[in-house]
Amino acid sequence: MKKDPTSRAEQAVLVLQGGGALGAYQAGVYEALNKEGIRPQWVAGVSIGAINAAIIAGNPPERRVERLREFWDGVSSQLLAPALSPGYGPLAHEIFNASSAALVALVGAPGFFTPRFPPAPFQPAGTPGALSYYDTTPLEKTLERLVDFDLINTPDVKQKVRLSVGAVNVETGNFRYFDSADATYTRPIGPRHIMASGALPPGFAPVEIDREFYWDGGLVSNTPLQYVIDQPTATDMLVFQVDLFSARGRMPRNLGEVAERGKDIQFASRTRLNTDLVAAQQKLTHAAQNLAARLPAKFATDPDLITLLNAGSPAAVTIVHLIHRSKHYETQSKDYEFSRHTVREHWEA
Image 1: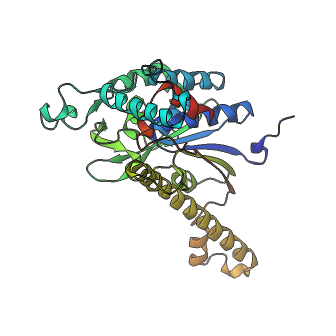
Image 2 (image 1 turned 90 degrees about the vertical axis):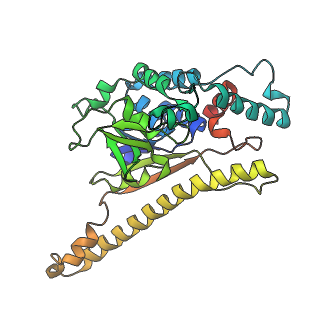
Image 3 (image 1 turned 30 degrees about the horizontal axis):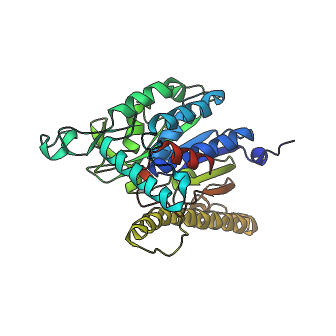
C-alpha cells in the first residue's frame, strides 16, 4: 500500500522555479507525484515554472501528464540527433548540448518562440519587435491548445487547482502575482498572464496586461515560495519546492564552466534566501505562539503580542525541497538547450 505524504496535510502545494529547458525536470517530478496519488490543490510558478503550472492547473488530473508530455515533446527538437549522438561519450555529449543550444538560438523552439525578422535593431523603436530577439506568438497558440483556462477560472473551488504566476512590472519594477484565487483581480487568467511570467529580456518582449507591461518574474524572484507562505491560511501545507538550479557544484575548470556555475549560484542563491527567510519566519511565529500560551490573560490584547502573532501564518508548513542536479557535461546554455534527448533526460532525472 502506498503511503500518502499529504495524509497529515490539508493542502499540497507545488512551487515551480524558472529555468527554461530545465523545466522538463518539473514535469517529471509532477509525473512521479501523480503516480503516488499526490494531487496539488495549489500550483505556483515563475517563468517556465508558470507554463508547467498552467498546464497542470488547466487540465483534469487524468490528462495533466499527457499534456505536459505534449508540451515538452512539442518544443524540443530532434534536428541534430541523427548527426551527433550524445551516446558517444562525455565530450560528444557536451558538443551535442552546445550545438543543440546554438541551433535553438538560431532558429528558435517549435511551439515556443521564433527569431524576429527583421532583427530587433531594424524594427521601429518602441514596438515589441524592437525590444526582443524572439517572437513568442507560437507560445500563445500552444497555451491556448494545451490549457483549459475556463477550468482555471471556474468559480467552483472543488473543481479547480489554484494557479499563481509571478511577473515584474517593466515601468515600476514592482513584482506581482496573477492569482486565480485573488478576488480583487476580476480579469480571468489567460495565456498572456503565463507569457508575462516567462518574458525574460532581451530574448522575449514584455507582455501587456491591463495597459501595463510585464517581464519575467525571475528578474526579481525566481521562486514563488515566499508568496505561497505569505498568503493567509489556517490550513496546514505540504509544499513541494522544485528548483532547477543547484547551489552546490564543482569548481569550474574553464570559462564555459565559470559561466554555468555563475548562473547556478545566481538563481539558486535567491531560492536559498527565500527558503531561509521562510524557515526563520516560521520559527518566530511558533515562538510567539508558545510565549502567548504562557503569558497571563491580561496580555492577550497587548498590541505588540498581537503584531508578533500576526507576523506569520498559524498553519504548519512542511517543505519538501527537490533540486535538479546538473550533469558534468552540461554547459552554460543548458537553460535553452531544447534537444529532445536532453529534455527527456531532464524529465527522467
